[in-house]
Length: 419
Image (cartoon, rainbow, N blue to C red; front, side, top):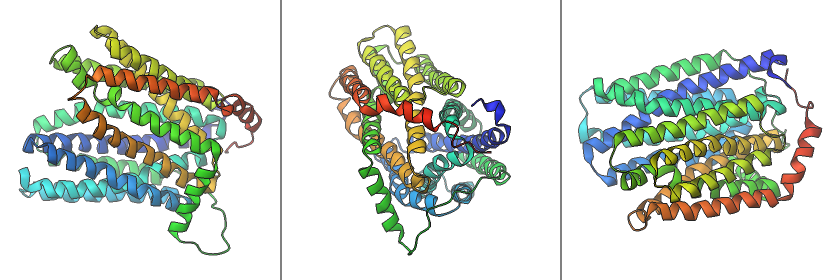
């Protein structure tokens, strides 16, 4: 179903994605600036570790409850409330620091604000992904998820540049005020969008949040395909850590301490992710979403395997570009499969588990592979993880869903259009 035949839902969806992109831009700038600020003020690995835990752990924990709330309540209001909570916390921190509380004296306030912001993000992420099917017909989900991934790639690429420029010309609280402004803009745009209501399954008896959370866990655990896919996604995130987050250290040890090399590497990765997302947005990927997931995982595994053996910088950069291209394919395929195969009344809870996979396995990978990088060659870890990623890809290919999901998708096409 081409987009030009659905102007109403298409315009709404693009407005929604833009609103979230604007909000994300401010949040990413603050995240970068805060990490750099704490690092420069303390030169302490302990403080940076505490800040990292404050940014990830609350998000992972609250996600499980947020999934229940996203299935119970109005998702648009939840997104606005989460953004407003993050903006209010950031505003208070900005006023606190503008009053003269800077340096190490501001660290406890920064950690506390990071915890609250993380809680808001944990509510925001599963709710956004659960709400997309309210706007988008089923055959447009992969394209929209791909475009959303491209927007996020642009934001992640521009944010460090903007954060560095702003920190160079003024105090950090100016960046905090900018985040408040982008949050207000995002909330304002979203408030004007009319979102089709989602209809939770009616219950004959009242149930607690904990009971509904257990229902979501039971649904996922008893759903053979969903259980296998989330386990594969979690393992994939964990195994991507050496080739995705330790490349700066690998470049320094292999090619020398050259800021230009680091910049080129980051640019290549983000450019690849941007192009990969745009390709998905233009083509929609395969009707059988497992094929898109398979290609994303396999190409990532093969490219990262080659990275482990590469000693020529231009080839290293080219491989990182292809690695960047695969990330939207794998992530968008997972999001789309969840949106297509999950009962609408369960979407929030299942997406909360998807969020837990990322916010849990990525820090776990850093906690394990980071210290190991001082003991083993990073290339050795990259090669080992690449082999396991390829095995994961083969497990996707050998699953029965790889062959049958495309038939189901074709049968469902046209049955879920949203006017």
